[in-house]
Length: 80
Ligand SMILES: [Zn+2]
Image 1 (tube, rainbow, N blue to C red):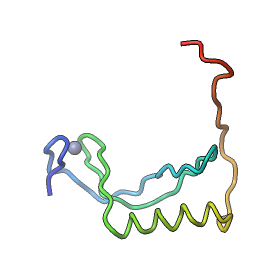
Image 2: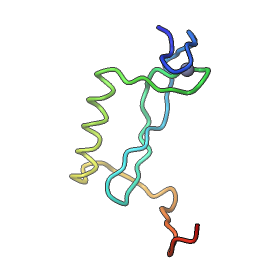
Image 3: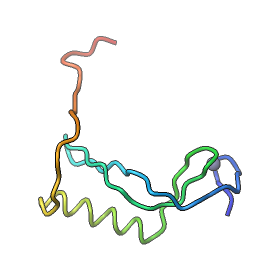
Image 4: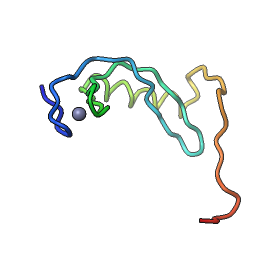
């Protein structure tokens, strides 16, 4: 398999933190996916897609034990 973005053959299964968003909440969920070592593109197989769907549902239904690790901020007014 070659990376469709950069063409590199260096693709490995790695543990990454996938960002799952739910309204104003952001959850970093550890998951194993194929990652291009050259450009960082992530490839999700069917198993990973299904797992992330389940994770989203569990977060929504508050079935997952979560702890706060940071803050989520947005500018008070648009200044740019
Ligand atoms: Zn790549």
